[in-house]
Image (cartoon, rainbow over all chains, first blue to last red; front, side):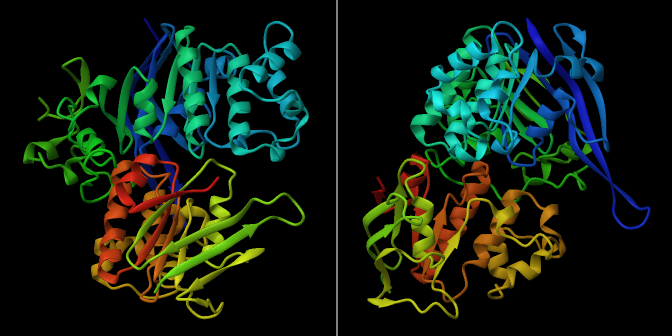
Length: 307
Length: 198
């Protein structure tokens, strides 16, 4: 059963350019994702494809000039802004992208303890530090005294002690060496196996594949494909969308061959399919409007030509 | 021209040695990978090679001579975070043309669109900015390029685009490259040989 469902989410920013002139940036268009208990959904795509903004939209922390439309439900009930505020940090927790999200003036042990909602905060914090191999003296340290890996484990601890049912992890692994990375990824799998729904935002397909159940591929602010991890194999024949195939083939362990061009800017999106200008399959029909997300072979795809 | 680092050692103040006795030789056109756990001083070593930092022990030489620290430095470094390596108050053409003026063919090789040159850095994505940072470092006098986690923050397609452009120039000019990365598969794909910093 889905815990969190996001349907046709669109987000636009209005910005003043010169004087009273305004410019609109369509940063997310018609995006759909579903998180299920016990499952990890990995969200992959280029930077600027709207991955972090989706996380911020779910938590209700978008800036005030954002216009949001579409619907979100949490355990079957609509997720209103008031409900987001009530649930975040309690039932829905974020493991943020940057270690700058720690309070620089508070000892890290205390930061973790403030997230504990039931039981003895001190004990919960000690247990979680032990589990993530953070030595007892770390709780008395300030964020600037931690290495990158330790700071990441602290952020993760904060999310875990909150007892949240939905964990959203935004790029939790860059800059970690392989040993620490494997451990961090293992922690997310453990969380899912204990009944959490996990959304793992990353641009590292390889690590996503090692722990996720499903992968959502983002492009220019929308989902182009959602596929089971087992489809990411060989030359990408099982994948549905031409962008997913291109992304897969561009990996150094595959062909390492890129397609040309770059993702369209949010202020100048193409009128039809967002991938059409770079697509090898493009026809005039692709320019006639945004394709709908449709089901295809155990996954979903947003492409009229996909088979 | 050969880049040679001999018995390099570095520490901050009177702290513990970050590393000692590190040796590296890079021949023209050669691509060498450097790997090792975080916190071992890979980035510091890169900064030493590119002349941003003086080693406490050891020497860095080009063809046996120490490098003059004035004029164009023939060893250029590209950083992991392009948004931190570009002046946010300069339009892109000013940052790009700081050291030299690449021609249209090179802009095309790197997939830099004309229109981006008149934008502010904040109006471009990380991948787009990194294309500028790499091209900026590839002036005609650059003999060696040090790529410190150059494409770590980028998606696979942008990563492959940038590396293909750099490899093309490396072949044309016989330019040596040092690749620092945590991604074993990228190192394996790119490098002629790999050294481990432990």
